[in-house]
Length: 146
Ligand code: DQA
Image (cartoon, rainbow, N blue to C red; front, side, top):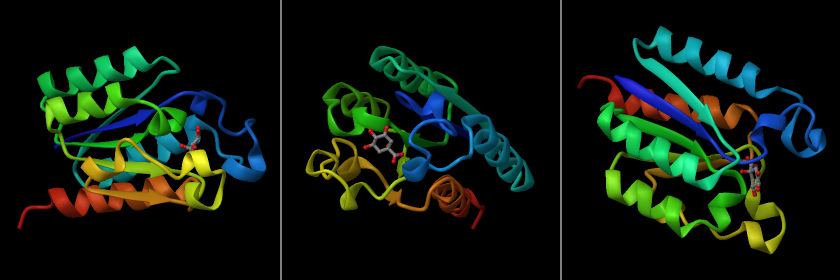
């Protein structure tokens, strides 16, 4: 099946950006490992990063045309602000998992609320780059033939 990984604003700076919070892996490191993990499970993985809300929304719309089965989404700060991104996920009705590197609940209050969490399958946060691996495990488990 097709799996899409969406990375929101500032995640292009991973590795260099606040490494004590977000770790030293770059986005390329993470995407490379996810692609290998998906391939080993017999799935196809694409990824997309943007700092622009409208581009992320456009990519979610495109995912419907591409018959993407599931999305893994770290929307970055748009998690806490974007009703429009929420509406895009609701519109395409593609199941998704919300992912964060950091434990947003142990941080500033404004990071405690998510506009996506209640329409996601689930949320994985706080495990650094491993959050993505755990989320992909969950996706693969859901996609596995019964
Ligand atoms: C983040 C957490 C967000 O609050 C923050 O705005 C980010 C990264 C994370 O992966 O921990 O950009 O989504």
